[in-house]
Length: 180
Image 1 (cartoon, rainbow, N blue to C red):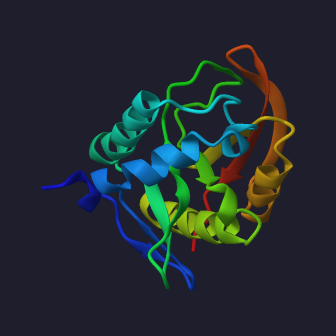
Image 2 (image 1 turned 180 degrees about the horizontal axis):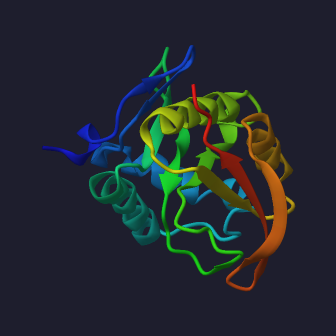
């Protein structure tokens, strides 16, 4: 069975969130190689090798942990817009991410500023609130990444704390599970 079947398909008014397929590699690698996209994430464009490893990690998360990343595509056109989801990267951070799922999102340059991130993150958090048995989720950012910080705030992340990831100053935010 292909791994992309492990990720549930989620929808919004404009978007489809679905599991990664190997056919998504070129779009994902192109996005991660764009200096504009990664400027406030890693600061360095990803190589094809790094993007391939990332894609395999996305599907591996679903297989081993029951959560992972989705491809975000336009419902109307099927065009790849970005990626959102949860991971446990076992990062070297202070404060610790405490084994809680780490939420993340990235969109190609042409898809930014259109509300797609807020829409997709809201939907993935609704899914997490229903299906994941964690009390909270976390996210981390470069403190200068104001666009992603705004998305985090709009979708319920708060409790801003400054810390470090490796040797980098990092903003940590947390969101309590919402019970319906």
